[in-house]
Image 1 (cartoon, rainbow, N blue to C red):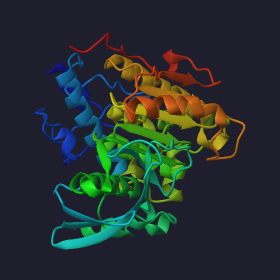
Image 2: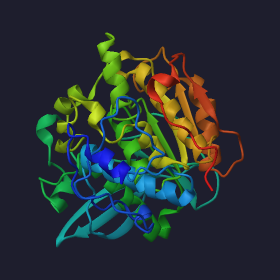
Image 3: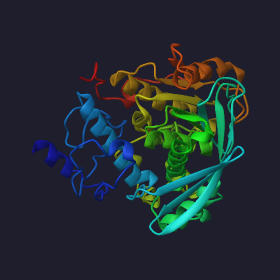
Image 4: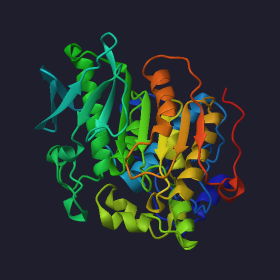
Length: 396
């Protein structure tokens, strides 16, 4: 009762609506619903990923599954926009190296295509990486590349392109999903289609996703929302990806030229319009982007960053290193890597990161046994400034 009263006492924050459905990978877990009218407390430091909405501390794997479900619901409702509650019908066909995907829902239908470049080595079915708009990382010749035109699903031309694209043909131009959530939905449909199409020669237990910059943000969200993705590789995603909103605000106040929540919502349509209510006061957000990493855990996650000011290296470093603390807490300390290497153009992959990238591809897509822990950054930070909660020693 004391915990409930404490939660209700935070009158300065927005009231959240009932949680909406999330992707099927977490719907099978029986968890307590987020109470109607739940008020998220204002938190100036990074929110505790190991504390349930009820106030209970996560100590078991079952509780962690429920906490991930809460984080996903809260992040969708306040930032990303919600996924559809219905399960679409998916069919597909192959013609050469092109797979055409047909999706029907609510009496409407769309079709889109992806290109599949098979590897030159290895045997089918192959592991694959789905690349938003094309890959800007070196993909080994033992891994297929699936190129996905995410702009076809949800346009990202400017702030005026909201509700445009094939996702919105199905679900309406007023659907709450921002472009990144729409893209994640499409990645899930690609995996659905691969599962239904043996002639594609793809092993859907070994699928990764990647993208750079705005598409890196999208790849990160896709990995967070579909647990069938074995390896998530966001590249130089910065604000809206690997950076934490609270830390970016602090960096801007300190004089850094960094993208913040308040700026990003005017640039494009990556987020739900619901996010606008929080961008001027990010401590009222119930989540932050260390918890985007938490949604991927314990699956493979390799976050690639640059030292360009606008990307926020002083935010991505602490944010993702806190993400690594979460991975440690859930018993997967080597499953998340973070590499910030500067001195190169945006989305121009430096050779210094190749070895670490290959570690993650080998472990999560090629079934290798290499040690994949990576933590590289020249930026230092004080953990006490952002973390005032305990990391579990392990979950039972």
